[in-house]
Amino acid sequence: MKKSSKKITRCESKPRKKIFETVSALRRNLAFNCIMLALLGLGIGILSLLLGATVFGIPMFKSYFSFPLVLILNLLLLIILIFLFYFISGRPWIAFTFPSLFILVISMIHFFKVQIRGDPLVISDAKLIFEVGTIMTGYKLTMNWKIYLTTAAFIGGVAFSVFALKNKLAKALPRVIAAVVLLAFSTMLYTFVYADAELYAETSGDSVTTEWTPNRNYISKGFLYPLVHNIRGTLEEMRGFFPEWYDEQEARGALESYGSSDIPSGKKVDIISITLEAYSDLSLFGVLDFETDVYGPLHKLQKESISGTLINNVFAGATIDTERLFLTGYTQLTAYNTETNSYVHYLRSQGYHTEGLHTGSEWFYDRRPVNANLGFDRYYFIDDFENASRNDSFFFPTILDLYRARDRSKPYFSYNLSYQNHGAYDSTRTKEPYVIAHGGLSDESYNILNNYLAGIYDTNQHIESFIDSLRGAGDPVVVLIFGDHMPWLGNMNSVYYELGINIDRSTQEGFENYYSTPYLIWANDAAKETLGNDFSGEGGSFSPGFLMGELFRYCSWKGDGYMQALRELQQTIDVINTPTGLFRENGSLTHELSPEGEAAYIRLRTIEIYMRNSPVTADAQH
Image 1 (cartoon, one colour):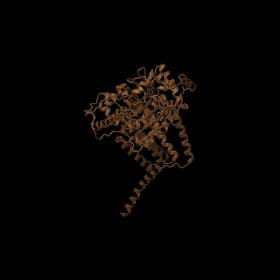
Image 2: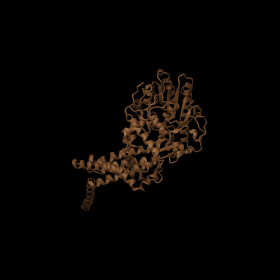
Image 3: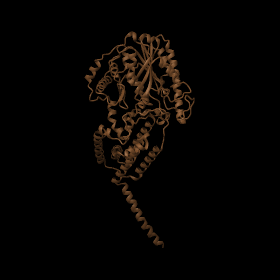
Image 4: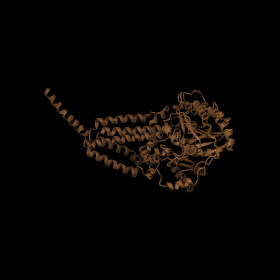
């Protein structure tokens, strides 16, 4: 009996040994490893699409499967990246882990960026990588099941690649050849497929995209595909790409045809311009019952000013778009890593001392070097003062102190940017109610709204006090105040939706609500007398690049040649909205300009490109 038992044990051990040997051989088999890496890549790619659908959720995710090309163009990218790492490293676990980690991280950033800001991740966001922590401070991120599923799947994939895939590519030459071939194939694929504009326009799994929802159109194509497709355009823009229709000689001639006009010496008034963070007039929507008259000082000031509306390019963030378009008059952002022609430089050439204040840090958006390149003699930041504060209680008095300490032998231009009212706003409690509880608001939204309005109420009190301090000033001064963008009001902008405020950019009303902020131009009595203008009335609406030109117009200054060209364009095209590609021509929003409008716009863009790529005009009188 004992002998028989040993025979059975030996018989049973042979199949186990054979299975072990088979599995061990399979783990080291090149074909098996390649198949498994491809399947793992497909799984991670699908999870990236799940995150890529962002706020549009499962319906958008399902739409990707209804259009096979969307799936192929998104999933293929990760698989190529995995095999490139496989050929370079020779290790399956490295091939899976690092490309997958990179793709999932940027997918999550995209997921949260759309959740908070409403905009998808694009290549140019890479320049903000060191500012992410500051930008995200205070925002509540929704860590839902998609994040947990993706994290668990990635960890499982890493474990599988470490313990189940053992085929190490040892020979260097075949690996190098394979990597070179794959890179060559990828280059051709990008050039003829991923960068193809017609294919991109026709590729979408979503059936409800509209002309005014570019972000949804982007997301309807997945995530990796639109991200990669837009690389070329972003890089071209960042390095000052010249479009095929650009002709430098023609641009120079067009600019010179306008000439450049000096500001008459007797008309040089002081200018204080102020951009207010997330500043908007929510009372205009007619849906709030106020406990306190939050906007009273603003409405009072508007009645004695020229007031109107900016149609910005940004929402809930990216202040530099509004800020720098105002300072340059350009229709879109550009690189500012060298001296760049701007209205600040023009004012310096007219003898103005140029300075300003931002109650934030100098490194944020590279404002210290950029503002110097735009022509500011001196620009102050919160780090330049002891006992400074980011609040308006420090901001407005400091602007006034700088103005009073100026060199009175020169005219003065000041550009200032506030920080107070920067999101996010506390959603857990209301310190003081500014609106009556609204039946359609959740507790969280009610808290966010009241805490935002608390900051706006304080800002308006400081604006009133600031203006009052300048009323009796003997020196003529003009003050320009405007908002940079609408505020973030809850994840996925819940407050707007709960209040019934239309911010759907597929409609004209929603488009205007989404991008609009107020502006006003006020002058003291001395400035009114000097300029022969009472500075009151309706100022209209337009893009921020036109705002400085409007200020000059009310001062009866012609400005430089570029401003004159821009003012000429404004007669027919006064809104140029870069994220949507929309224009307002003769009062109507459109993607397609008339032949005359297209010619006028191209002429202006030609001059703009010439200006921003030409040496700065010498500040002769400075």
